[in-house]
Length: 118
Image (cartoon, rainbow, N blue to C red):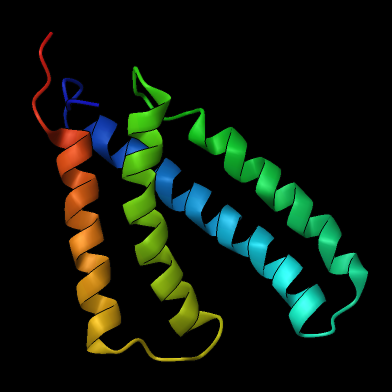
């Protein structure tokens, strides 16, 4: 995604990536809650739906190559996971969490916004 559509394309892509990250983390957390926190197996139902939503959302990214879209998504996933740690699990991230997330977001931006030959 090389930003030919301008800021609207960047905002749309960022929204999709964030939505996909939340869906993936929520889906995986549902399995975590079932297996590690002794929650009901009913947690698996929204978990599976959430993981399906995650996969669907990633197909909405405007990219000519799936691998590039997935690579950039990794940085967004990491930063969103740190937010999940803080907001859902109530564990404040430390400076290393924040520095790592920032580095990953920078890498995602390089992948997404780097100039590509036409």
